[in-house]
Amino acid sequence: DADVTQTPRNRITKTGKRIMLECSQTKGHDRMYWYRQDPGLGLRLIYYSFDVKDINKGEISDGYSVSRQAQAKFSLSLESAIPNQTALYFCATSDLLGEVQGGYEQYFGPGTRLTVT
Amino acid sequence: SQQGEEDPQALSIQEGENATMNCSYKTSINNLQWYRQNSGRGLVHLILIRSNEREKHSGRLRVTLDTSKKSSSLLITASRAADTASYFCATYDNNNDMRFGAGTRLTVKP
Image (cartoon, rainbow over all chains, first blue to last red; front, top):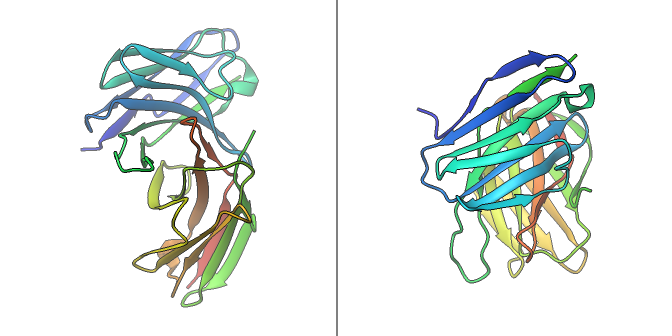
């Protein structure tokens, strides 16, 4: 079974609709992230959470909100979807390696392809 | 804004050849990581190099880091068709900020 799962995998929605993307992980990691990927722009961070009571805005948080319901669950909401939010959305987790200079690797889910018409 | 910028944007080689991708970044970093993404799928971590390291190897992968030039390179030796994917560098700084570049699309022809 996959360590990081995302639902739904594909979603088509209309402008103005509220939509929630869900992420679950079985890795036991404290840190979770939401990214969006657009062609030619790589990944951009939307929100991240270092534990259940911690929520932080990323580079492009406008138009999005998140909820960390439990250590294993981190959901992303689009309160009123707009066409330029059409993108591939990824959830990721990480755990601090704890070495002197820190650093960590991220584990990604399979992605959710969202289309807003 | 992106931190890492990969070069080239696209690379096409024959199986058996080596592939080299470069990444430049702008600010001081704690570490730099390379990830691979098969089309439309999640990213997979390949290798991490810390700011006090200059070179690291993992199987057919060799990563170098030059902090004075704020650049890194990823070398894949003896490439295979299965190496066809997009490769991203990601920088992690002391503010816990991780930024991905736009990626290099590698095509390895059999």
